[in-house]
Length: 149
Figure 1 (cartoon, one colour):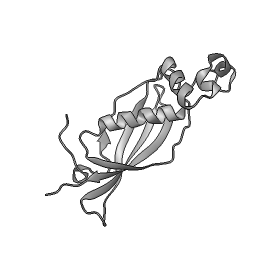
Figure 2: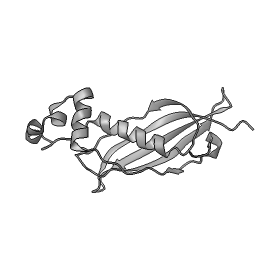
Figure 3: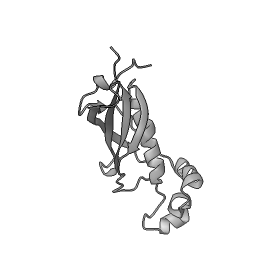
Figure 4: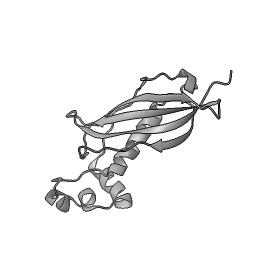
């Protein structure tokens, strides 16, 4: 387990070490069946006839997967609570078995005025497929513990 890191340890522009991931066809269809049952996510024949010309991942599934990867990459940062999600941009679809890589970095760091033991920070990220196409851009706002010394 990583050693504890605090708001004080972060710097504007610090990168997170995010692992690549992919979403398989069965996984895409299972998630969408439960949470986003649109035909271009769950029915191969209908998806093939759609503007997407095949199954695509739900944006909710893709964003949830990004959350997982970022949480894994926090490297001991003492998150107290998530405060929000920035606007989500989806310029290209995620297709089954795309290899997705994330560029994520810390920004908008500021210490809380009303709660000096806490700091605010945002992780902004861009997710790209194996062709280098951006498939998702967003960010998460966090409240993070500060050092107590």
